[in-house]
Image 1: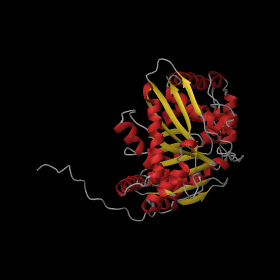
Image 2: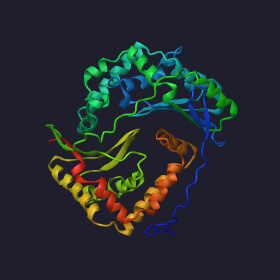
Image 3: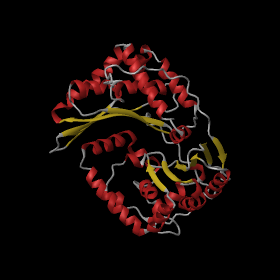
Image 4: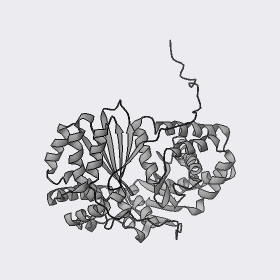
Amino acid sequence: MLLDRTTPPPYHPTGEISLEPPRRLTLDNGIPLYWFPNPQLDLVHLSIVINAGSLYESQKKVAGFCYDLLRESHPTKNAETFEDFLDFYGTSLNVTVGLSQITFNLQFPVNQGSRVIPQVAELFTAPKFRKRELERYRAKTIKDWEYHRKKVDFRSSQLMFHHLFGTQFPYGKILELNDFKAITTQNLQQYHAKSCCAENVRLFMAGHADEHLLELTARCFAEIAHGESAPLLPDIRDGYTPQRIHESWNDVLQTSIVLCQPTLHYQDKKAHAFNFVNTLFCNYFGSRLMQNLRERNGYTYGISGYPFFYRNGAVHSIDCEVNNDKVEAALQACFDEMSRLQTELVDDEELNTVRNYMSGRLLRSVDGTVQYMQSYILWSYFHTDEQRISQLHDTIRSITAEEVREMARQHIRQEDFTVITVGK
């Protein structure tokens, strides 16, 4: 018997989302440790999160160099010996260097925690940056940079941050070869001491940890010294002026397009409604811009837009690549869709499609202990908690077509966007 693939399965609306808050411990030095217990997880997940990153750099690229090299900077083990140690105990350690946060994700078998935790903690309390590892990493990152700088999308992203952040932040500075060459082991040691302090660190643990492992973790990471909290950065909406920026490149087949603007803060009361409108407009496979630019006109393979949040501000960017002769047509299609959102009411079918998509994505973001913990990391950065997800869920279920139109009129307006094009 053949399956009927023409009729979709029945849809069941999601009910209330209620999450059990994590247990919170406070280390002797004030670092918070959030524990998400799960007896079924024998592999313990520990995330060490530092309020640092590219936006807080005192010197261009120092954050990436410092924290990418940290796992190779154990005070008593060289890089090869430390890697062998991790492998022997079935442990993985990965780092993500973001604009405003550094995240180390450590996974280890629960019965090896007493061996793994003390050794890993020493990376954060007493690292030793070595010239050999620095030179190897420098050569690799320069090679990567030389490859990416030939791409139009990489350049348009650089121009976007340069325009939005300017000279207020080292991150707004256009990266040059001399920035790589200027990094020394002394720079790394100083940046680590300044940024990896108790005021900037948070710990998150998920799995079948017992009281002994929690106490061991608390004791080891309590050795992190005190320092100064990461500064509260200015809101880039102050002094922002939208512009049209073009950089001409020869011998490229496609042009990179970026539309960007400062937008609502993460904790703004309207942020959930903006999230919904942005998803409908440009942030899922059935969005207005995807339907127009890809499905109907074939201008681009894909287009997406999303907000990036930092502690005191946010950036809303939309980006795609199009054939050189379709740049103005693609831009006009974007602006036409903005206008349509501001003048026409979204019909019930499209509204419900976005509701269902966002509800499903929301549930997946907390589907399991580790996923819940990863979501909580973001919430805690902005001083919110598990209530954040139910608030967004309420907005998804209740937002009206009139509210969508009003949000578009206020926050998705052609005249507010900086338009950046890099290509022919």
